[in-house]
Image (tube, rainbow, N blue to C red; front, side, top):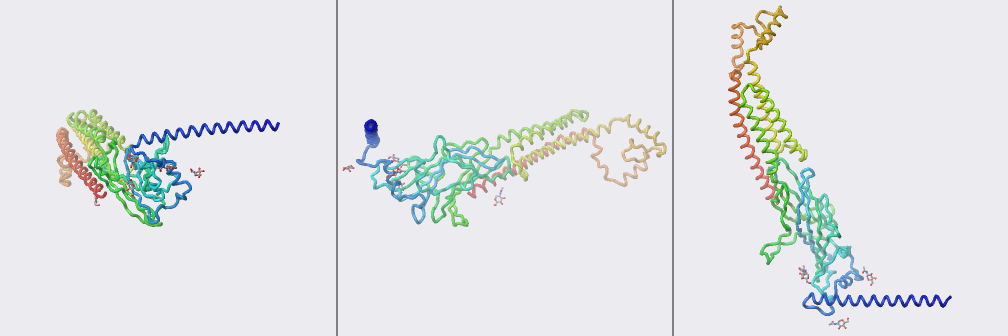
Length: 461
Ligand SMILES: *[C@@H]1O[C@H](CO)[C@@H](O)[C@H](O)[C@H]1NC(C)=O
Ligand SMILES: *[C@@H]1O[C@H](CO)[C@@H](O)[C@H](O)[C@H]1NC(C)=O
Ligand SMILES: *[C@@H]1O[C@H](CO)[C@@H](O)[C@H](O)[C@H]1NC(C)=O
Ligand SMILES: *[C@@H]1O[C@H](CO)[C@@H](O)[C@H](O)[C@H]1NC(C)=O
Ligand SMILES: *[C@@H]1O[C@H](CO)[C@@H](O)[C@H](O)[C@H]1NC(C)=O
């Protein structure tokens, strides 16, 4: 029995040894492959150079590297660069904008210097697992609504170490930042959005943040700013007018902090609003003027025109307003819509006057019969007084009428006696003239205001 156990264990151990041998053999072959590959990739292969993993192990394992200790006692200088990949939305309702952005941070960590280790490469490209073992400035957007590092299929973090200890970290993030929406000039408006980037934990004594200095790129002959736009920014309803990067210093209860401010100014493309709001309003108003040339007898047709125009206008107004926040000040489009509605309302009022005149002019048979009835009903009433015949309940005799005229010489004024045709003719000239004047005033005021706003926003940044 004992012998059997001994034999079994012996067998097992020899097997294990064989496996071990196989494994180590294979690994050494792999290593040879890799070194061969590396030496073929780089033209000047260094003998006995240290590979990435060895360097990382030598730097971080057992050297007493502490990720919670600030690399240099007198403060770390962190330079920041943003590369804007895309700006996806600007939302008026929630007052924010969203963009995909690469955040680049660079600092010097002397503890990570590996020049003395005879590295095979001039830089090490690493991933987020190594970054988790390094000191970082813990910076973030302090005014963002949402900020996340893209993590599909893995965390989009790039880390590069230089032999002199410089660390370069690049995060690909999606940020939702606030916009200071001022819709008073809507839809001819200009909007400003901003983001503030700073170290969350370390104050100015510990971390000095700054935008990377502009570099000269000899390939393209241009200056590379700390903020770069990769590709074109295409938004359906805005154009990116300007953007800027400024560094500010701000006092908090815990000390002074370096803040990096990034501001964007957007200009709305108002073509969509012109097509959806202004153009239909013009047509509706022009149609309401057709009513003046239909003649004073076409009351039902004219009523229909006017009321339909008013309803169409209210519907258009509602449609535009639905996608805007309920601000309590007057927007440019409110002025436009309300004045346009007033024009249509006034054309309906004109129709009412014309209709009244027409009714007044018609020989009223009905009135006489009613009057007779009334006279018979109220036998006690003085002769010649009829409630329906005379508007002012005055006796019909000329003397009293004359005395009435003397009493109020200015009333009724002359235009009350104008025939309905004349009222229509005057309205058909007065309405377009007033509308043209309104257009000139409106467009010149708001375009002037827009250029002033543009200047205000772009000069402040
Ligand atoms: C390479 O390393 C081996 C042992 O680690 C050493 O014997 C050899 O001298 C080294 N060669 C050079 C060129 O440094
Ligand atoms: C550090 O080195 C020790 C051996 O020296 C090893 O057991 C350990 O797994 C290493 N740690 C890391 C994180 O590589
Ligand atoms: C990293 O090193 C490689 C060669 O090892 C070089 O081609 C590349 O330009 C370096 N990258 C940077 C950003 O320095
Ligand atoms: C470290 O090396 C990088 C890349 O070669 C260089 O850009 C940087 O200026 C160096 N930093 C220092 C402090 O020498
Ligand atoms: C532009 O700025 C000036 C001075 O700050 C201010 O008085 C003016 O109202 C601003 N204009 C607009 C359109 O906001």
